[in-house]
Length: 352
Ligand code: TXA
Ligand code: MG
Image 1 (tube, rainbow, N blue to C red):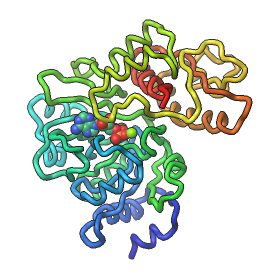
Image 2: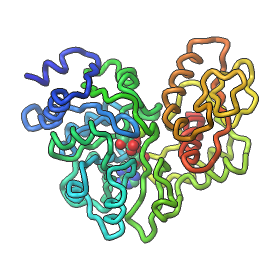
Image 3: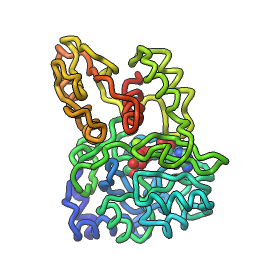
């Protein structure tokens, strides 16, 4: 009854993330047994918004893949409220346990061997490992606790497009879906979590984020070549063969396809002097004819927070203005959080 009321319109509805609405969202996730698959709900995390289903609910998980148009070979992250719940889904060896104890809750996803039969097989893409993360956002944590189980959730965007960092972004992505969206404000970090493979002899970063390789004492494998290309100042952009082959060969996580996080408009990178027909996304002192500046003070944390929102805004302007041919982004220093920012920009610039 409650659920039917929440989903009666054929469009997304944004609900403030108060206690009552978190409980309604939890009930929607739990509703699987009665109505042939629980509902999916969108919720905030400290990184980006997620599109969640009960981790054990095969039909609900399928709804995520359908809504996003996500390839079925790309597994989902299971969001948990702490180490105890994490261990219901994955097998943590000593090293993974130490990392979880040190970092959870955090924008860090650990890939570990699967604990059998606890996760819907659709969420695992046929693999025998599982990606687990404990988000630090209070709304995400409250939702997981209220549901009482892990939530399988990718970023709440159509597959391949820019991840959402506000509830409004989610509503824009799924304009024709009767989706329940919990609004917890703008995501603080603004970039997806660091994904760390803990299944081999060596810890390896599969996706860069705001938790750094040096903090975890591991090798930054995925993106390493991209990072090197950027620091060597290779001329690159959407149509550059060097960056295409570099990105292709560095795929280690099924979801790290080359074209990702992409605006509809072409994106050129490392641009110091934009042309009049380019919309310029500035950074620090690079602000000639700037449409938007990721961070006037040159702060990478602020730049990460603004990145997806600003890309969306410029994309909309570019798409509706015949005099603009593309977006051009200023150079971003390739250190610290800049590595993750450059990784996302490289994928956004990669022609589909
Ligand atoms: O910050 C985040 O991680 C956000 C929020 C919502 O938590 N989620 C997110 O999910 O970015 P998604 O689905 O957009 O990206 C998850 C990434 C994909 O690249 C996927 O291939 C990878 O994690 N992944 C998931 N399970 C995996 C596994 N078992 N082994 C290796 N990579 C895995
Ligand atoms: Mg995603």
